[in-house]
Image (tube, rainbow, N blue to C red; front, top):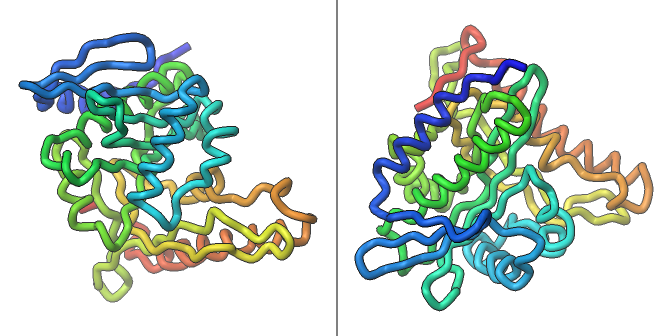
Length: 278
């Protein structure tokens, strides 16, 4: 079997390692220590055996992101068992979570895949120490490992960035070693526009199919090509078993499909069908 070329992902990993000021030491398959000067942190890839640390991580991320955060019960009882979903946590010497991230690996057709980075957060008192870079190094390594398992090429690195935090987020994402940009296009009149994007609801009324929360306007941050449809289908498509009947499920699906059509309509305006990153 041919092994797809993932040199670009490997190049980003090499840059992150080269720019790191921390010495990494592996403790076991799921834990490393990060040491620099007088500080030491532990970086964990969480599994089903880390219930207390996972719960603390969920509470930490919920405290940072509030609206739009995933349901803790689903994280603890479903998604943590999925090998294509990764939860990483950084703890201080007392074992307190001071930074965390969530990402997922999405295999596509034609031996390609997407890495979706959903949440990355660092406690305010620890910002400026480039701990986000350390989380990204572990996230990108997770993607590289899954690419080898699936024999796929990472086609895109995709993430969402809220309007409220976009300036802070971009300062991190535009670093050379992370290299994520927003998606734009020129319309038929030559006006530059950002690709419109919202995060569809994650919570639904099971008895009506109506959203139980508002869709969140976000900026789409990309490394390579945008593949929005795959993200919607994989991460936001309502599951039929969560609703009282198929009619209510279909109503919820129609809401998500409506957001997708809005994006497709905007992209149809793109001059020569081209989208660019900056």
